[in-house]
Image 1 (cartoon, one colour):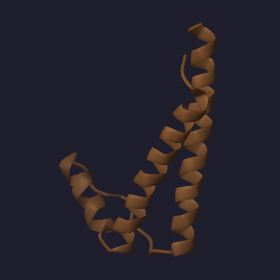
Image 2 (tube, helix red, strand yellow):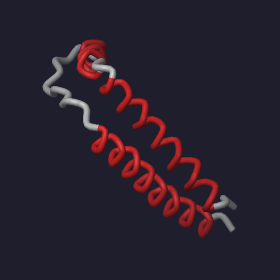
Image 3 (spheres, helix red, strand yellow):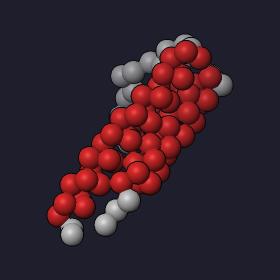
Image 4 (cartoon, one colour):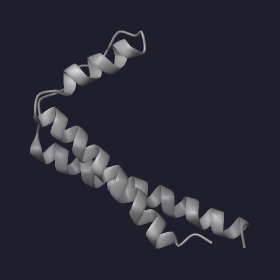
Length: 85
């Protein structure tokens, strides 16, 4: 059995940290260069442009990432526990 609370918190924090790192990259002005590099490494042209950094938007991004990951992983743990009793 998966401990639903610990599982959801773990993935929620992981998602929040990953998005906080992305917000930091954008805040440092490296977001567009990073995106261009990733696309070029996959033999593709980058069709997107990175917007200007906004602290409010960054906080919202991190909070939303935590919330969505928490909910999705909580649902996953509930389903897992039902089928693996």
